[in-house]
Length: 502
Image 1 (cartoon, rainbow, N blue to C red):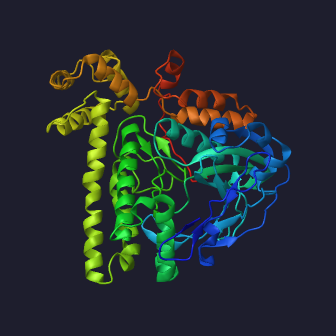
Image 2 (image 1 turned 30 degrees about the vertical axis):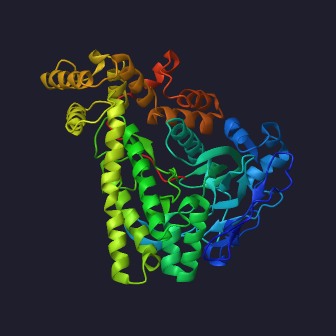
Image 3 (image 1 turned 30 degrees about the horizontal axis):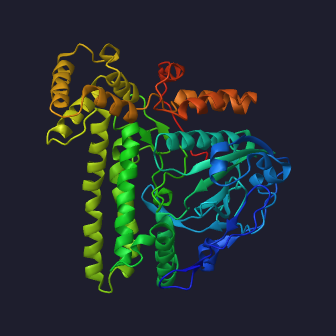
């Protein structure tokens, strides 16, 4: 048993008796003050059916794949019943949505418990689309099949790309229709996360709870995610710096694969450093920093090129919540916070540039590397080049596939790039291997995702989705089978749009 320093909260590590499927729940979050959550009863659905189950994730959680497909455990995924030691709750939090502060919370999700794996690792198990909660704000608390499958596809693709993310364990249909613009098949997704503690959780504690509860939350977060800083001279400053560092790494990884989150509200920024809440997210085809897919982001606040700046803004809001804990003197606390936030830009830039070097096969550091990268990106934007396929073509020396092949500016850039590679000790073969490991052959392209969702939702055909998942589960394999998934969508006069269905 561990005791969190500075409060009476404890994390229980005794092993509970395993159920047949391997559910092994603890419930540390519900030992926080009651203001952080609302305990919930089941919101049963009519006729749950399992449509997809993540076997590899289930095994890593210590769960039995065959037992998970039983009627009893399908009922667990549907929220009709819960395993022993489950303690379902909806979490309270707040957040800035498109810059405006509001009270929020799990409006259609339940944290049913924390699975303790055989290795002793703790993961949140959350049902998304499980029904109304006190935070539903007039909504029905349910979700449609399409958006739940969308989160499954994108989150698993992100995991395969090596990007920290929540993951998807299962999707069940509910046997009920939900009303949006029309009647849609209902579904519930089981989401797995290191935790669901958000910047918005701290904003809630700071603005709508007490300083004592804020401290309890901070201590809990340190104990759960950053135990190594527990004895730091200023543990709350260390917490801030750790979160800044993780977010700098995360956002850089997004940018390196052309991922656009779509709704980077503060309640969608995870303290653990995972990508969370896949709503109107998508991957960029044509490189353009102004790319926006979300139908509600009419002013481009969360455009691809803005993501690092929004991350810094969100982290500043997080730092504000910690001010009472950083120092008893308000002015000194503010200076500590400002100095910490000021580090984000350099950290992000270092991570992004390091990643770009690997995408170009560069091992060491030279001052002009950033100019080399930016000149390539300028060409890509000018000639409307596909982000993923440009780096793929460079990786396999298929320059004739590039839209700017033969242009004088590309010839000049390529000459500088080759000269740069020759100035490092590593061989051409080593550079090629580095590029293959850094440039995915495939991403879950938007038209392929829509194709899979259409087949599943409208035709009951999950084969298209299964084939897509198989391809994106090993994005750096560069196999012939993946080639057809590298093709671009048919040109359209209508821009691709995503919606906040999740």
